[in-house]
Structure formats: structure tokens, C-alpha cells
Image (tube, rainbow, N blue to C red; front, side, top):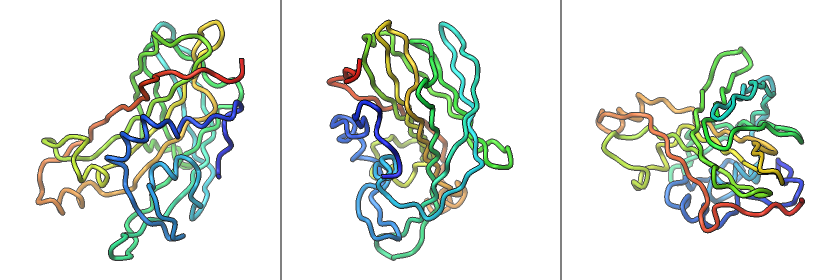
Length: 232
């Protein structure tokens, strides 16, 4: 795998509740390496070999709510992948995964508020600004959970459960949250960002020029919403 597991050995990407939800919308594709499976989850888990690795990207992280922590900038390692159409065998796109290592301290945030993550390319140009609202006011001490925001470029009269929603994914951000014994909450371990480099105009044209728009959807685990940390 490209990424190391959390220090406590748990992997929140395999939460059964989230996996059942994502199976409705995440794309099933073949990569040039011939590995079959769910591309979105496989890439987020680091189970696919990238076509190339690029350094020089950066991410600025901030938060607001009960208090506003200082913004911090982290280096981002970017892994590029090549997809091909499973029916035609033609290359479709070159999505990439941005991996942000938060270090041992992570990034402390309010119990409720907004996380902002701005991704910059090596030229210093903004690629995407993610604004994610969250509410962890009921999170017990010494627990963990996660949140995944998916942004789709989709017809304005469709919903995220549409059969074609897997084709509409443009951006994804996966955040991990952890509470301490005292109840303080932080973003921990890492942040993973998935970017599909597709042309909105091309997609709209292929679908008869119907009105399209970018819309974001948030997914979190439930039953249970929170899990206990192994290490205390």
C-alpha cells in the first residue's frame, strides 16, 4: 500500500456502513495495470500503483467555529493514475490523489464548524478550495470518525444516487477526526484528496447540453458514528 496505517492500526476506510453507501456511486473501472475493482476506494486506500508521483503541490488548512486555529500549510504528494474504459480499452482520464501528511500532532479544530482546505499546484495556482461543514458536538472523548465530501458535476435535476453519478465525480476530500481524553478534537494522520481532470463542457455536450452544476455531498459512518481509539 502507498500509505501507512494509523498508529493504532485501524483503517477507517473499511467501515462497513460507508462501504455499502459508496458502492452505489463510486466508479468501477480498470487501470492500465489490469487491477479490477472500485477505483475510488482502491485509490484512497493506496492499493493501486500510480503512473507517476509529483512533488511541489501544497495545501493550506484552516478552520472556524468556537475558535479559529491558525492556518497551516503542508506539502502534498500527488499520485497520478491512468484509467481506461473497460468496454473500449481506451484511456479516459488521468485523475490524481493528493496526500497530506498531518504529522503526529495533527490539526486541532472546534467541535463544530467549517474546515477549509485549499490545494495549490507547483506553480502556486489554486486547484480547488474545499469548504467542509461538520458537527462533532456529540463526539465522546477518546473516539474517532471520518467524513468524506464528494463534489459532482451533474444535471441540476438529478441526485447523487442516479445510476450515472459515478461518471460525475470531480473532487473528493476525506477527513479523519479524533478526540482526546479531554475531548479536544483534531484532524489526524492525513487528508486525502481525489481530483478528476475532466472538462465540464465536454460532459455537458455529450449529454445534449442539459444544464449541469457542481454539487457537494457529505458522507459519514453511522451505527456507529464514532469508534473508540485503541491507544489511550
